[in-house]
Length: 365
Image (tube, rainbow, N blue to C red; front, side):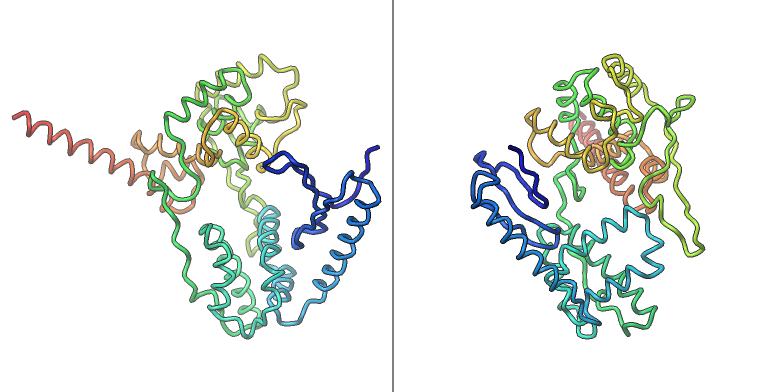
């Protein structure tokens, strides 16, 4: 008999054994339920004990101390600065706050200094990008609080960001796919498969995952793909207006061929090019998870993601001689620094090649 109980998370561990955890909320630590089988008296006893423990912890969390960090973030989320953020940005920030508030939310904001801020940052020192994102979030909170005259100064301003660890290709963050890896993936998943189409969408549009999962037939007209970028699409300025960014890119022939081959094999064609077998669209998180699973199934090493394909596309274009402004237009970057990473690398390759050609001429003479 199947028993449905709330707040249970089930998954197999590395040895294939079933693990069951009770977790009422993301901010609470999961409690493992070891009794078997599920639904047995012993199992239900552990389930109700975990339920009572989390209810008690939630009750304690709800008692927010005035002028604590948790109180300040709660007030910030009621203000206009928060309301002007896009819905997706709000969700991401809220999730990041909830990661550390159970441990740092009690800190009095009047006594929080750069030492305390560093402790919040350094919880993520193994992931510099995530650590620096915490600083960015907190900086915005205290800037708002200073403007509202809740605090006299911003303790985040004196805290330095953590240095990113550069990959072998000179970039930071997600590893860039190599040409050989892209070719190998397309060999593993031939023309007509969803995996082949996904690779073509990622690399021949250069879009973010949040945009790639929404692209479909409705975005194409006269050989041009037109879409509103999901990033910051709902952000509202101080005048209460949104200013969504519209991107227009050409439909390249390899992508057109992949779409044609894939659609010829499908009984259900959804609103998006990459979709579940039922035609239901993916979202940014589920399409990333699905694609990484296909990468692993093809025998690749871990660390290759859809975002790494976007970086490969940028490398292709920069190597072909694209300017900083051209890269910014294609990839939706607002700051030139991101594009210059790729143009500088392309220029270095070209200079090295020209230098070696001069060496060749010298030795031949």
